[in-house]
Image (cartoon, rainbow, N blue to C red; front, side):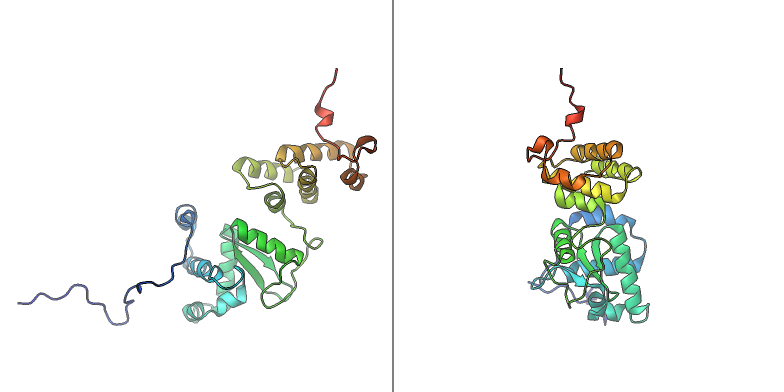
Length: 240
């Protein structure tokens, strides 16, 4: 008797990956830090597809949410499960989880990029007008052009990678100071070539006690007309 083959592919089943097919690189952190927390199947499907679609070679690694939803595989998958609206909601979930970053456009669409250093920089360039959003469109501006709205985003842009300690310090600062103050203090620290949270925090403490009436002048001139921006640590140094 001839044994039946156990590797026969059922009708309609996926037949296997083709040799030489292009691979999509997904950071290992996704599987260790993100995947265990995703409970919604739609968010998982859309997140995985977005990681593939946004990073395809040949174009800027940023896409409109409407363009992601219109991609044939997703459109087919969600045709009877909420359509483009469900895809948009899942993308917003991925943004809230931190896998993606986004910019709102005035036409109601959303611009999304993978939350990597390159993706963040690209969105900053789009927000500042240095890059054009796919399909045109104007970024919704909650603040002056080119000004990131979140202190954490400003910190990453002006100083460097967020650490858990800095993240906690920023959260504490936001409970005491206006977000605009924190962002400006971080930028001033960068202008003074003192890129550290400790320096920015000293600026905030000085503004809290002395006010910010002359903050524009302090960016361009130091004490006694020296031309050097003032050092917020000067007040902490006790000279004999």
